[in-house]
Image (cartoon, rainbow, N blue to C red):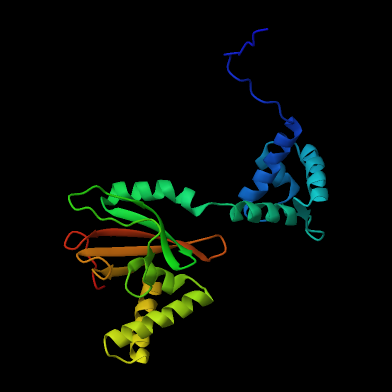
Length: 245
């Protein structure tokens, strides 16, 4: 028996309409940004108050909605928060950063890169080459120094990790030994540099890692305010300046 494969467009999958209707109430509460009276929730969801109330009662039993016993106002519940946090925890910074890197490269005309904190430090995980007359190569997997690269300085200023502090202390000692200076003096100068980076929200480095190349790097934070990545732009000295102020 021959098997026939249908070429007709796939029909829209069947769902549960009542769930889709009720979700309008959750969207209304989320968009309201504060607790709301029943009449306001119903109006914003486009349904009668009596109908909205029945949905809200079910949502309260599920923990998606809660009601203030004193004011009667409705708001998103604890389970709604758990769902939101679980969704945020599953976000992939590398995937999400792809379009951002492409857009930044196109608009600036410079090579851009994404770095994340890895087992060995600030690590380049993705880069987009501008394709200019001078090729700027930044390999994925390369670990960047904390005290002399724009990317590393961004992590040194904003990332919080006991391991980062140990690496930073080691780099400071190595710099002091190479320049025949006191580690305390090197660390004091670095502290002032990191304070300036935090003040401006961006780090910069000039020719420190690759001769003739300037870099700017900005931190990327998650929903809780923790740094998760750095976006860095690299350009040729003279065309891509690093102003002192």
